[in-house]
Length: 189
Image 1 (tube, rainbow, N blue to C red):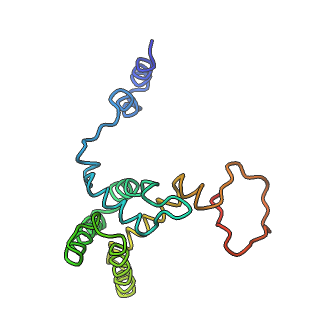
Image 2 (cartoon, rainbow, N blue to C red):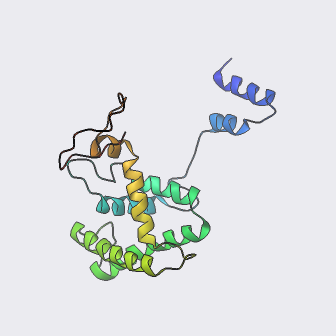
Image 3 (cartoon, one colour):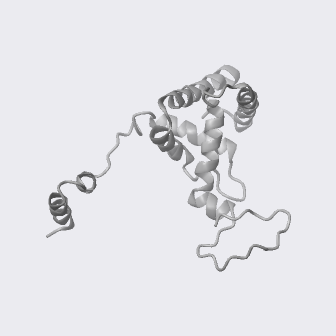
C-alpha cells in the first residue's frame, strides 16, 4: 500500500473531512506560467520584486529580491486583502510603471536604479501626505501597502531574519540586559 492509498482511505474513513489534503497530495499544486494567482501575473510579481529590491537593496546582506518578496506580496494581497485594497494595490502597480514610462521612457523594471529610487522617493512623499489627510474609511496609499509588505516579507524571510538581523536558531536563557553597541543589528529571535 502506498502513502497515496493510505491518505485516500483515511479521507474516506473520516467522512471526507480531509478531502482537501487528500486532493492536494494526489494532484499537487499547479499554476500556469502566466498567472501566479487570480490577481497577479508573473510579470507583476517581477515588478513587485524590483520595487521591493529598490526599497531594500542588496548591501552586506541580501536584498528583498533575493528573499522573493514579490512572491510574498502576491500571496498576501490575494489571500489577505479586501477587494477594495486589492484594487488599490493592483492599480498602484500599473501607476508605477506608467510613471516610469512618462518620466524615464522605460518601464520600472528596465529603468536605471537611480531613476527607480527617485521615483519611489517621490511616491513615498506622496503616500505620507495622503496618509495624513485620508479619512478613517479610506484605503491606504498603494505605495504604503507595498512598503509595508516589503518590510514584513523581507524581515520574516530566511534571508532577512538570518542575514540582515542577528539570529540564534536556539536561543538560550532570557537575558534582558544584553550589552548594546551603536550599529549592532537588531535581533530576529
